[in-house]
Length: 86
Image 1 (cartoon, one colour):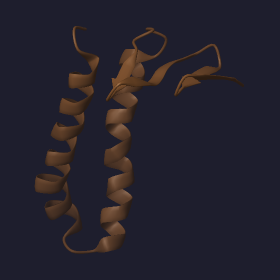
Image 2: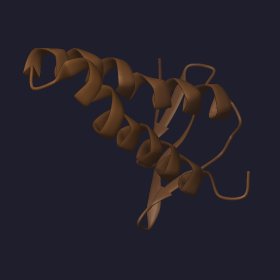
Image 3: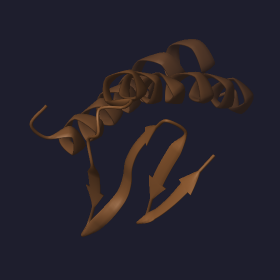
Image 4: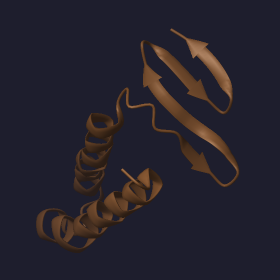
């Protein structure tokens, strides 16, 4: 994948737009409790897709000028330049 950051941003934009312009008006109306429940479900969809695509691939993500999250593999999380082993 040439630009994983662009993929992540576009996926989030598409899912958010679909949720706010189709799912929430059709299924939730103005009920805040339903919006919250549906938002948890809809928000987990892009996270699941990105996890399937990038898990263990070694793809590095950059935010502004430094690494934010490099990879999650073998129970190692490299976050903001610090290595945490679980």
